[in-house]
Length: 393
Image (cartoon, rainbow, N blue to C red; front, side, top):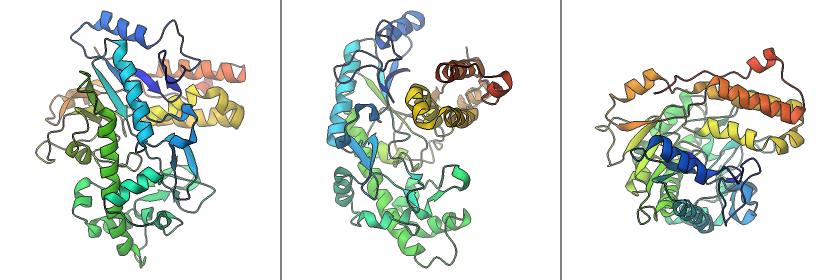
């Protein structure tokens, strides 16, 4: 799989947006596709990835909105204009030739996070298009039910201490389908998201399940719309997911996408046994927790290094880079995990990112030298080290 549209722009000469500066016009996606074909032959499928973030397009008409109606500079895939733009990118990728399929990465389509400026957790998205879709699928409450420390999402989202992100409970689609408030309350109390004396918990659990049902339907419909032209174009389609459950950053489940026939394949780390989960879905096991979620965070820092360094200062920039590097230690791409995959009936094969220690440290070293003008000492560079995945034949 080759990067087609990333967090900072398309990697080819596009009529929609210019390429980022770090991509050379003389060596970009068409050249990568050609080289892949020359080295791997026609027996190998060549995929191109599309990340629907589109923050680089810098137009607030596309942006996600939280429950306070504040913008986040990331596109909402429910917005028909965003769907149209992504379809334009897909058509351009098809015109490049040599491509067999496209993958849509929605592991962070709807960020939910803590914030110093608000009580509780910021949730997305409540733009006009999302609100319309939620109402059509049965969720009639105002976004005000998501505001404050007693917001309904408190049962599944909790701001972690010491700036360590947001803890989350990812409900299964089956739990939502059954409107199983008892199980949701039990999970939430056991994880200490709510207290046993929370008098509004049962009422809010019921509201939350209605919301999650509507949200998964809205998201699945949007994904299907974006990828709908792939079959007509002769391209295979795949969706990258962080979980088979309703991951709180993707706000959809494998079941919801399968019911909508949203894609040909789903690349995710945790699909159930075929006998345990209904549907005709086809899956590849992504050998990393939450699939591309942590890799995207790391490469977003890398690609936007100059802007981040100016905004944060050198010290905070390096600290943030180190934090995102540590999350890459969760890479589980190795010979053992691939061997196990071959015995699992729910997967067609594996997906993963073969980013090892040497490659990672080379990126960090160059970035640090470019930004700070100095070479990182060996002992400091070692703190950025990640695990080295096996060399796969």
